[in-house]
Image (cartoon, rainbow, N blue to C red; front, side, top):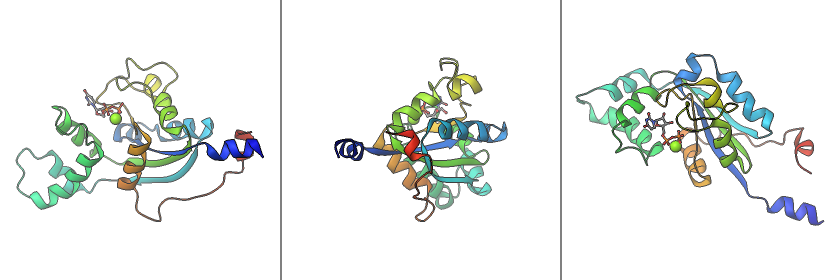
Length: 181
Ligand code: UDP
Ligand code: MG
């Protein structure tokens, strides 16, 4: 009864992982998903998302005339990157993230947030260790192929931003009993 109690006390976390447009264009989606899958985390949400073209263009406008159209999406991305929206690189980051389809994912498991950050590697791919996604697959911070939430709170918050109710799936993987004692 004790191990069961210990297992059930482990905090199950969620993280939002996104293959950025460069990862999709370069055909890296399968490789990236595979790393989280093979590690043993549980996929609970998965979709390809394309920022509507007019909104993507609006995000790249230097002079914004349509504030309504622009604001809906920009506010959303500003919320997603709320710690970064006053940084000088923010406009280019928005342009990058909206430049093509992205793959949105929700992953679940004890310790998934920190572990996913390790699997992803440092923000600057040249500093990222070999064996990590960015260390193996990218060369520049502005094209670092993948996003991962930086805290359990942000994991929940970002999944709430990118997924609608009903898009997430609760299930028990058949391998569960072979992953944890
Ligand atoms: N970024 C950038 N230039 C910088 C820092 C960040 O273009 O100097 C981009 C990069 O795509 C990064 C994202 O902004 O992944 C978010 O930055 P953060 O510091 O949160 O890095 P991450 O959590 O993605 O490692
Ligand atoms: Mg971050």
